[in-house]
Amino acid sequence: MFNIPDSYLNSLLEEDLQHMDLTVMSMGIENFPGVLECSPKNDCVIAGAEEAARLFIKTGCEAELLSSSGTFTEGGSVFMRVCGTAGAMHACWKQAQNIIEYSSGIATRTAEMVKNAKTVNSSVHVSVTRKHFPGGKALSLKAALAGGASIHRLGLSDSILVFDQHRAFTNDFISLIPLMVQRFPEKKIAAEANTPEEAEAYLRAGAHIVQCERFTYEELRNFVRLSEAINKNAVIAAAGGINAANAAEYAASGVGILVTSWVYFGKPQDIKMKMLSI
Image 1 (tube, one colour):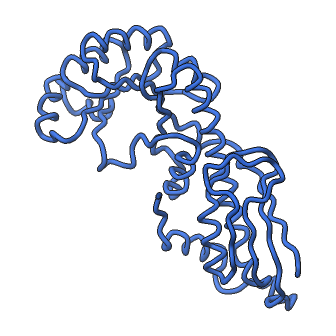
Image 2: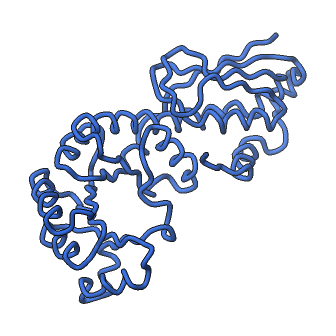
């Protein structure tokens, strides 16, 4: 279960429906009964369907999910059917469509990247970052999970990851690694390295996870072999410019994790919302 609170969905509803739907009221069709069917224009991995259904329920509709998030759905196949009045359906159908289209876009890109990576390395994880659009964390992460990814970091409080920006405040980061391990014994210490030399130094100092930023394929392969000799339990992650097109090459290096933000940015899926009067 991935929790997206009602308060967030209420904010989306209120963003579009401040008080009333002037178009529906001006036509006098508020109480006319109808049905709405949702289907993708093209094959895709559906995501955000549960949240869209909850929006319809909030405005007084009945929503039936025929396919849940994470389901591969052929173009033209109905995955959700909604019944309600014209007023209730029009109150949220556009926000519901936005949720599904953007979420399904993320899920479909993620699924493609996961498939490409696991073709050559079945144990590799595609892990998504917190570089999503501000305010869109919950939907973005749930969509990535629906596509088969794992979560790199939820935020600053769930994990330790040292960047250049942190090292700017110390002259001897290497000596801090054992102290960091002592201060937070239940947490793994992760550090981003810009060169193979940095990566080796962090690993030898006791870092549990080394994130290799924009290493070449050859550098990654060599470092993975070296890490197995230094600490076979260390986790090696590759980051920087990784996407569906090059995921297989990075995965073939033997790294355990491919860190990516790529899945967040791209075209939404085209979801058809067909509404009929009954």
